[in-house]
Image 1 (cartoon, one colour):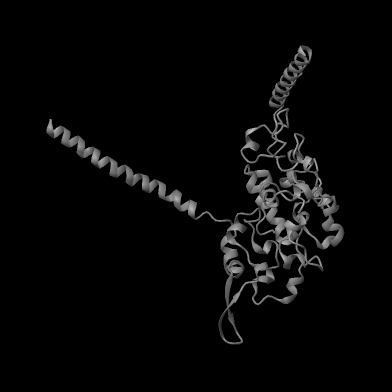
Image 2: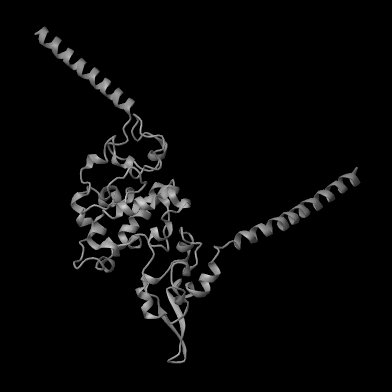
Length: 327
């Protein structure tokens, strides 16, 4: 009996190490494949452009002094690698959009005059991206204050950096993440004095000062996008692109703080698949993200409140009636 138990223990002792060894062997190729999975042109971009533009400090060989030299990369030309590879264009080669002449360093100064592509240069008539309706976006952008003031020089890239653009509004269920990403797009110019002066001869006042009418500016910009108030809602687009002048922006609180809230046609449009019912904002998606005073009302709770109020008022009236009659 002892020999039998000893043999069984020995076999079990051999099985577990063998199973672990096989698991490691079978799992390792998968892990390697996962780690080696890079965008198609990653190595090409790293060897040519991002070895300089992907770093805050870059190094090059200065033929004048016959030695290496380090410089600080202009922040406007510094590309965050993770942001780029996580963007909608992350699988592109740099020279898909920029002249191949940029691969020669030092760059020819005339290359700075190279016109940048617009969205329609690549996406117009493209069936694979038809759902985004780029033609309609361009039409709405043509009506915006940005275009009417600055003309065709105010291209898509003035707001949407092609090196980190994401389509969060259509793909993310995290409303707060969508809000932060969208507002960062606006803050790049409207909260950056250097960029703002590219389009204006006067410095813009601080954003909280401009939005002095908001009861709590910080809370608003954390919970809703700037475009909720500054963009005309377009039913055929998930995100409108007709930026209105400041004097035409939404300033009436009731526009959002009501059961017929403007937010249902803008910020919560993607998540509002079944449409707004009598419950207003009464659904798990929105209640998990934000509480909008006046908009999270429920029809049945409102009805119950009115019934209770009516009964209370009736009791008071009856009580007053009998008090008067008794006298």
